[in-house]
Length: 507
Image (tube, rainbow, N blue to C red):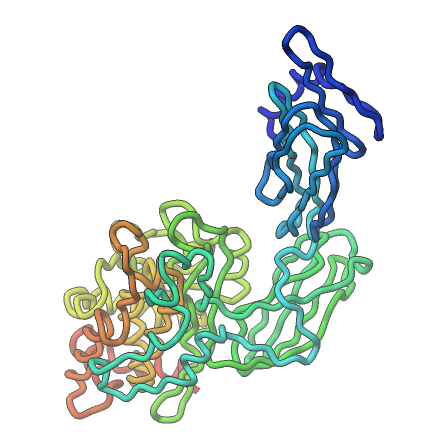
């Protein structure tokens, strides 16, 4: 209950006449004034379950009246009216999205008088639960928006100046489907992988925290703590074309849920939880992030999963902080053990986003060819940190602020060195289009950027700056040979390191 309203109501309560259900009072005239009368008929306090619903408030009054909900999740109809007997107001309580109970009120006002009607709603223990799946199901791993783009588009090598197909796909700030007018409500979150829930019966609960254990056919396993009293746990960040087993157990060892499922898709997207953000950037957490695993090379090999991740920032100097406590646990659950921060002086951080991660921050101000040539020593430092992390079996997440320019430059270098076809690297680069406006558009400020559009296609900025440079170094050779020539002749990386890196990353 609002404290200001409560104080005001206490001051005026002695001036009200309250009657038992079914009784009424009439006003009395004193000189030229009529004494205000407001009589609640029946309930003055209303309780709703988590699903919400409707209820009826009945009252009589000798004055014109208004009804004002204290919270947006409460609606009243009508919200005002004339004096009368047995007046009815319909109270509508929306379904909650929270697990905790919430309270509010409705202020019923007549001239110089008001009374508060208390509203209480139970929390929904299943609030926030993703769609449930069944034992043995085949689950889509990455978002369907990115899947459509990846499976339908084919780019030929050396064509980045000719065209881009990314604007044919829904999911980015293209100025047509998503604009300043609708992005806050309709943004499709195409940079986020699909999410599912494992559920269990409330009757099976025991006291104490619970634990989720998952394993897959690729040799990964992870454990995630679940809060006491929860009836579900959401799972996400699934590797495509994989098979998983899972179990949820109590502190005493009782199994609440167990089973298996397999996955499909073309991309290992990852997202780590953060608190909702205010302002122009929609959604908190680690955005625009994905694994390099699964991409095919020209010689028929495949990049291994859970070795190298790229994305947007994991931490920052200002609020809101991208990762919350649960998001930090999810980073550990995924198995990431190293963080490479590519940001410049204005926002770089020299401590890891999650305690215990190996950390490197060379301080790089600009991506593109400038990063490769003017900052070649720092580019070498970045590559060596990635190589040493992989060699030490410490999966590494590298990022700048948005995971777009400096991250895109290093991403082109790594995928190119491993032998991914240049046309496919273009598709990986353009996936940033599916991230929120603060990541996929150069400015999320409406005043300075009134008609924003995603400009970081393969035809502009980093991609069109970096890729021709590597092709020039390649001469008549492959794109991989051009990247290798850069690393050896310009950055000063040894051939032995390059050969070892390929051996560690490819299967």
